[in-house]
Image (cartoon, rainbow, N blue to C red; front, side, top):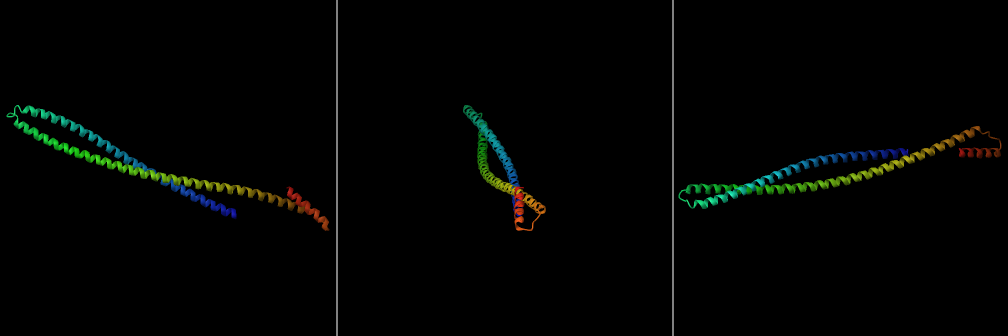
Length: 212
């Protein structure tokens, strides 16, 4: 009964450990899904960053083009000084165009600064989420290691219990064979009337049971 109770206790512990291992696997699967989602979000953020960099390079090229255009307009303005009377209206139009281009340049610069700040925010958010995920992975790894060690201890206890059971079974078989030999010897023995004849008979049967 003690062995059965110990066996049932070990079985209960094994089921509990198995349940905890299954729960840990589910948590690990959920964490992997979350990591996959976070990776997709980070990839989307990287795509946004690349698009912002492309837009920034485009704005820079536009600025360069506008700067060259301004230089060309300045040269034309120098040339227009020679024919001021004839090109006064044209100079006014060019000044207005330059003002409009300056406004567009300012808007482009503001947009580039806004994109840069957004890139920095996304980068900081990505780093924070990555740190949290690293901490969560480290905790899950520690929990899994603890579960493995507990499971190994339970497995060792089960092996010890199995060895104890085999040893007890062997002892029980030996005692059973010894008892069977004693009963056969008692049935075959012919008891005499005197105590001297009973004593050698009992000793002889005990030696036979011990030898068997």
